[in-house]
Every structure is written in structure tokens, then in C-alpha cells.
Length: 186
Length: 221
Image 1: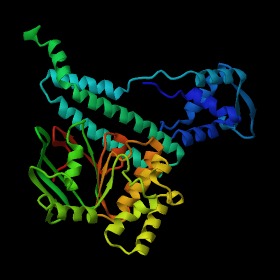
Image 2: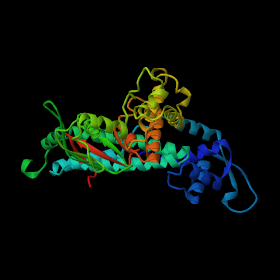
Image 3: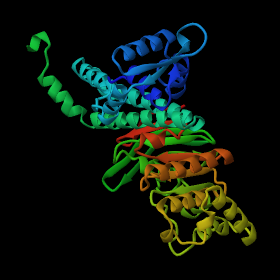
Image 4: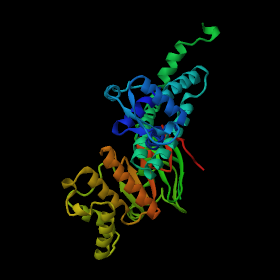
């Protein structure tokens, strides 16, 4: 599964203005509340790596002590790297849920369990999650709404897959039976 | 409040419903999903008294409604039901305003009161500015919001909605669903909503799933 790149995201946040590590972390948590909150040490370690790679520059040190005082700015190499990242479309990936679900359906069929009931339960779980997302969408700001929309559309695609799988269970069962690896048949 | 037990409906040799059970509480919003031909629209029409079942029982509150005469069912539909269908099905020769006033006029509500209630509903659905246009002169989303206004204006106990956003893009669909479910909750109407879209079903309190004419996935108390 693709993950959001913390270094590139921090680089992107630095493009509008040079910032201290602390404010950068705050901004990240504010904008990407769905992601895991960043730890201070992670932010400073990332900024040091970006500086080592020439993607950020030190833009001065404010009065006082500690790493919070150091101001970071994106370098021209950093801007190039950011443009490369933003310019490349993400590789469309099959959601992990569907891969796991397919495995469960196949195992249910090979073991003589009801794959249809398994898919029915999964559909209800998906619909329950979609109701949660809808509630979140209604009460949230535009960032929360877009976040919820993204998940809703993906869950909707999963639902269509569930319906399609359910409609073709007999055919899948025949294929699975053909590939039966039980000792007495092998 | 709405109680269905062992419902069976046939169209000639085709079995559309085959022992469907469902119970819906007052004010609840329930989505009905299922593959094509699973009987979801038939269930909706049977609940609304538009299809006479071959077997089973439908109760609205304490009253059994599946065995009512055609005249009694028409009266019940007019008073207690509101309809939102995929293409709105507004009367094309009437303005949106006249369409929304229609259920009230048929219920013999005085002209002035009907006009005031229709205007208020049109305003809530933000189609008051185009209320004097005919359905063919407004966008699909506006027409469908007028259809929602018409379905709700007489404060029916039950709204039946068959793919109410099936002909709309997603943002126009959201406006229609926000209005339909929001106003129905406000006035305590029960909504039964047939859809094949998970995003639409997410507006409901729960979803029942039909396959081969039976409710195979849902809650039946």
C-alpha cells in the first residue's frame, strides 16, 4: 500500500515560507489529521536528512536554545524534487481489503464454508463504515469532507466488487474446485 | 411501524418476491439494496400499495394494508405516502410550484394554505426562484428537489424513494439526498430508499439486502 511520504510533505509545507520544526509539525498535524501524528524527533531527523541531501537550507537561527530555534527553507533542489513528486501520478493500487477479501472468499469456497455469507457480512461492515464516513463528512470542515469522500468512493468500489464477486461465486467455486489441492484429489 | 411478513409477489411466471420479511420503525431511514431482479423495487411498490401481493402481510402501524380495496389503497397513498422516483415524475404541464401544491390540493387543503406550505417547502429545498418554471425548463437536480418537496409537503408517514439520484451527478445527488433525509428526519417521516449505490445507502440508518425475492441480509426483529 502506498504511504504518504513525510519528507516530501514537509518539503511541500516549507515551500510557502521558511519555518521552525515546531510550527512545521503543527501544520502537518492540522492538515493531515487522518495520518499518524508526527513526533518532534521524527520531524527534526527528517529535516536533517533533507538538509544533508541539499533539499532544504538553514535560513537562520532565532534567539534562544534548542532545535526549535532553527529556521528551515526549501532549496532549489528541494523545489525540483517536490515538482517531480507532484508531477508523477500515483500507481493505482488494488486496495489491500480486496486482496484479503479475495483470499477469504477462495478459502471459504475450498473449505466448504459459505462465501456468500462472508460477502454479506463484509457488505454490512462496509456500509456501516460508509455511514460513519458520511457522519464525519457532515460535521467536518472541507479537509475532513475530502478525506471522507476519498474513503467513501473507495468503499463504494469495494461494494461493487463484492456484488460482482457474489454474482460469480458459482463460477469461482468451479475454478477453485478445479484447483483443489486436498490430498485425496492431488 | 411498517411490518412485512412472508411477502410474495409474482408477475406471471416470474417470482419477484418470495417470502420477504422486514420491519421498519417510525422515523427510520432504511436503504434497500440488491442485484437487478432481486425484488427491491417490487418490495417498495408493495409497501406503497401499488402492487398486490400473492401471499403475506403488510401492516402500517396497527392497520393491515395489503388486503385493502383499490379505492382504500389510493386514499392511503395520497394521505400517508410520498414518492420520489428516479426521474422525478413531476407533471410536465405544471410548474414546480403547482406540482408541489398538487398533493395538498388533492387532500382538499385550502388554496391559500396549500400555496403557503408549497412555497415554504420550495424555499427549504432552494428551488423557490425557479418555482414558476415547468420541470422541462429546470436542471435535473432542481426538478428532483421539487419532487422531494412534493413528496414531503403533506407530511406523509412514509416516503418511498426508488433510485432518487440515479439520473443525477454526484453533487446534485447529494443536495437531493441531504434535503430528502434531512427534512424527513425533521418531520418524523419514515423513508424506504431503493438504491444500488453504497454512497446513497450511507444516508440511511440501516440497509437491508435482497436476493431472489428475500431479505437475506438485514435486521428483522
